[in-house]
Length: 569
Image 1 (cartoon, rainbow, N blue to C red):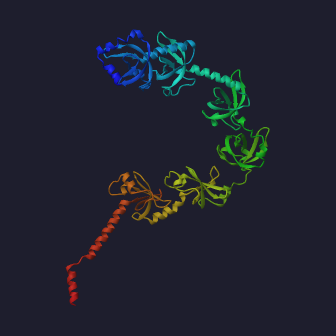
Image 2: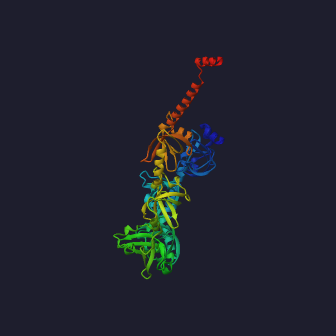
């Protein structure tokens, strides 16, 4: 850098001697020169252009679209020689003007020869209706010409290089328009021609779902779109293609038909699999009983899916022996999975008739014939869901407990109260099965007697050992037993007001502490405790013990005289 500094710092007289050997006219004003960056000083860039003195370039001319420097010391660049600054002693050069000059040559050649030209998207136009593309010169790219599809995130394209077609040029006005969409459409057409030539009916190909409409789904096969009609998606019942497909899904399809004249391709998904009705009598013989899903209700019955592509009709007359029901909804609902029996098959018409009344009495119904409402039973926790728990009562018989029937107090999840595999007690709370044919059970109902016993035994003022469960701003939630919870309000914890942070330091979930009963609300299943009141009681008890001990230890003058008389006697 010392050489460049020496050059810049020469006085005008010394510099004028140097430029005698440098004739700007001989080189040519605006002539292209190749130089090497030797230093960057603040806003100036020093370039060795092979002359007696260096060229000086404005640093702004070397910045990228985002303001970062595109070049570093040692890089070779091309510039235009502009003029000589005799006062400061350097030759003024321009990279930007060189780029503009070269850019216009490239743009004009690309426009005349109708060839693509590489450019970089550098910024959005002020009205955001397009981009500015840097090709040495700045060209306008309308938003409609960016892509075949609508551009959803324009800012993500900033700073990226793409190939463009120059579609409009006004060299006199120094402006032009480019298009990327034209090139993409040409590329798409070429791919479509290639695919149409290679595709044939019966082929299995991969594709991506591009859009879904009421009558089917369009699938991109790699530049060519085909249609999967709704009827060709599944052998089963579907009301809308969205039930089976989503935009962006990668799927395999079978080519059903190719029209090379119109470019239309018909595709199928279900054709990739065997027709489920081929061996229907073997899979579903007469008399077979099975659990199946109700998929649709009509006035005369319910359609039940035995497997994908195979549906049977449960007619309203086959729901019950107790006369014709007024509605199907009395017995089944969409999504239910009842037991049914195959009672008729017509393979040619693809019809299966199912029956419900033909089944034997359900195990759960027989269970309720032996066990009545209010009875306490033992059961094993089989499965815990967020809103309910399934319990095994006996072989083939399940009961269900709703989360609202677990505790009189709010619980976040049944996991807080029980674990899978655990054996517990529950009460039958209804003589009828729920809609899923489960015995309806409750656990909180067992606590009624326990609450009454607790209330009778622990009157206000009595102390009880409790377990800390949760600490909050309002106070501490505690557990007396599994079925009895209580609460210590913040004002009943200490004489002084305590913060949540202090409470969390002093108490931890699981800690066992002693507290005083202050109030029990049996009808609301609530009990309140106080640490503050218990502490005062303990203090009074300690004081009474101390005072009693003090009284017993005092010796009066009368006591001493009496002792002396006793000695004389």
